[in-house]
Length: 366
Image 1: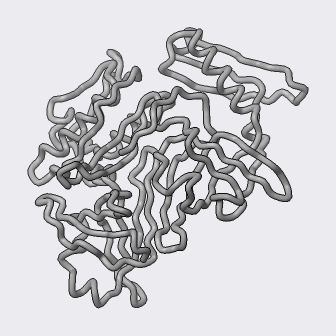
Image 2: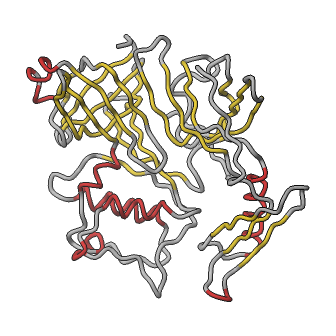
Image 3: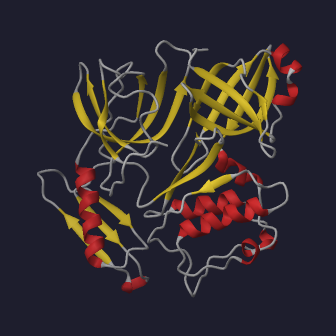
């Protein structure tokens, strides 16, 4: 284990530190967009037997710290002895809602909702979960607001007690549609040393366009990744649909003749009411799809061009790939990361997606 890293556990209810420095090996962890991320590691069985109270699944919170900064936090879900090793698996805060249900109905009277901001409903879901006895995980949800809407007078947003809905699935549904808010899980130290567990909400999207960091082969990309050129992703005509039903559906077409075979793609935006907005979204989608080339994953090392931890989930970063086949450069969005401490220097694998035409916020330190 690299000397800069420390792993420790905390009791989910009392906040007591169960063990200040776990001797973990084969560590891999990361966060993701609209998901709980992951943590995997192994520990010697003899040590685990002697310290079993510090590794109780469903009770212990597990953290990864580097240079005094929290890099990851979540709940330990599995501790499995196998072939002379003791395997640990954890997931971050949003995974907790997959073990919680609405057994009162309408989130104990908070719903039903009509034309409600999904950010409000997400906060209500967490408030409902954490007001139950022994249910307070201490997660704070950002006060972000959005212009997205959930529920209509004809079809309000409901959570029926007799369906015992899983709270995590309710959140997944709220962030699944195009134009919905987005989230990721984070944690950080306060000035007094207390740990803040946070669900970070973003609208119209998480992240920022980062001009202060970059990833380039031969500099901080460890091995040359493939650049995929796909005709399935290409389109020079976009057929966009907005709100409404049947013949009343709002509709926009954005075509261009570029010397290529006509290839069409449908963009469904059921919450968009204005045809002008629909037209702009269609044009942005067409511009994006006309640009070929996609780098889907890169492995990077700790480097001044982009120190590990300098990015946030959702950020757009310039990626440049040069190899014997191609020279490619473009803006890529980080949708997940996975750290592998212990190498020299430390490395991380980033899952990427071509950056779309979104509005951008500002980079955050936490």
